[in-house]
Length: 590
Image 1 (cartoon, rainbow, N blue to C red):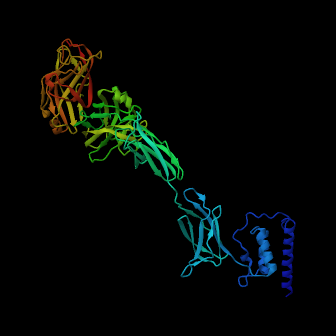
Image 2 (image 1 turned 180 degrees about the horizontal axis):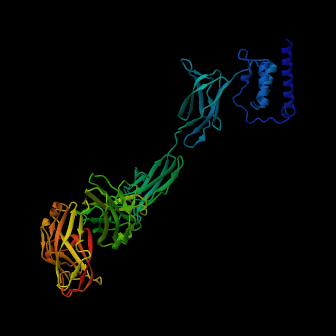
Image 3 (image 1 turned 45 degrees about the vertical axis):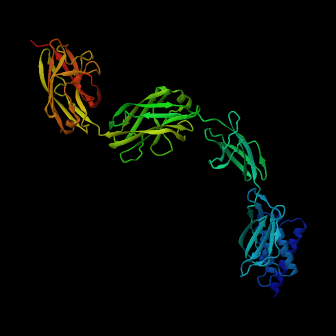
């Protein structure tokens, strides 16, 4: 019993010391100031009361003093605990719901909103006292008698909202509301005219997404009802260019006048037509580079300050878009259009779609308008070494750009229709000459010799194409010589039985001086049927007056555009690489 009395006396003395601290300005037990911030806001007076009696006993006071010393509770709460301990009365536990009501459009507090709470724990909701109204700051507070589940509702000028909350003993619950309060519309007014100032009837006022909002009357005027806020509009009309966008802020019940638009008449739209005739039906060998011409005819009026470029795409034999700039596919190496000052050396990938590319140079609408008729384009293309063989479709179009043709630009529109050409990529054709029986040989002036020459062909040759053997010789001075002249180095005949070639002379073609062709051709069908190396029997003669010294003899297989013997045909392409052999013409030994 003595121990309990002593404990009570100790706590009482401690409480007196605390009260004396309050009296001299809040000096703590260790002689330092006790701050009220950084404390535990969740502690309430009820936390220190006895669970059964509701009275603050000595143990509760001791716990409060310890919490105050450690900074867990503030001075005001400790004072309340001491007063409750001294009075010996049960602690009254209260709960409340508080919050702020705002206008969701303006994000401003609403004064005079009605807030009510109903207990939903039991069947038949029970209202809690009288509804309250928000103050000038939009704040409300509802005192709750008993912990439990509540439905809180708010109403202001027809706008309502409600929310369910659980309220625990002694708890203050914060619950804010944002109401969708009806607001009066504002109005945007203006006139739409042409460049001469005449009104345009039926012009459409549209938003930034081209949704039609209203149209103009006979006098070109319009009146557009809008919700308060910022609105972006423009005017459009048939036969006229769209106006620029106008951004108009409108307050509640406000009329904004003078939002006028002046529309420029549309010029005749420019036209662009591609001619891809030199690509249509072509065969491109893997690993080969070709130069072809393409036509681009432009007519009409183009927006002067607009930027245009050429869009390219290719579909492979499977119908898939391919990387037109990849070395292992079909590559456009350059496009040169002198009339439009376009000299593009590469293509630039854009983010429109995979496999769609643009030239790295643009041309202005002013340049297009000034261009007259067809502009010839020189196109250099390469079929990659590993390009898939088969039929491809190449497509070109002139497009308007929103900026220079960099990787972030976007195609605005395509001028006219795309032009397409179908071509085929085939395996690389090979023709390998073996001139070893001529290499290093000595031929005497005035003598005739027979030598074997090997020719091995591989690949898929066009069946109806014609091929011939091209011959040329350089004399010791590096000058081309007349291979068929009797006073020089003369090929008298070439006999290749497997290919049906039995040429008795050479025919000069107009490719270049010193370049000749056998007077017989062979079809691609024959070349495809050839198996392995074909031996050619070559009869050559060194003329009586041939210049002595070291010569270089060159042979190649070339595709022809017609009959080689007519003297007017042209070599289209060389199959594989030309092969050289060096020999020497010496004086006749006597």
